[in-house]
Length: 207
Image (tube, rainbow, N blue to C red; front, side):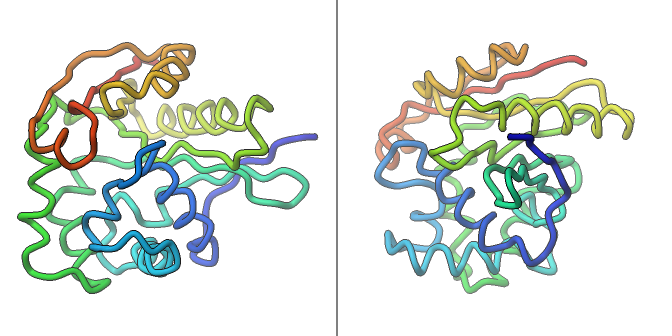
């Protein structure tokens, strides 16, 4: 079965929502979006995330930043790549407010932003690298990454970075196989209290 990689469209928002939710939880009971939308209800979260993918404020969650992997005409995986100087924290807050988050969202997000990492201003960032459960080990994520790195190179980038949770051994192992190495990490007590993981780790690759 061949894997086709294409740019996401607005109508892919429901699938992107599914992958963003899956990525944010990463084996935990609660993820970032359970926190910001103040619910664990999957239907409500998917509805909010579908809207978040199409907001006017172009946060890193916007569909324009995503590639989608397809097999037999079915969407099976995603990878988001974005420029941190454009998709800033302020833009993310605006996008969240567009979909109904309260004015206190900045305080809520401080739990995550306290784990501040030394992100390069000249790197492209990767996020939401996810695949459907039945597609593991068929090369979906590798194909998404290869295409994303090629696109980034054509845009003039030579460094890519990604953030994972400390203790996400499976994710770290996969990124290391692709050539990423850890460059920074930050442990945060509030993050651990909220998500059960001790903090965040930054991985980087030069290409």
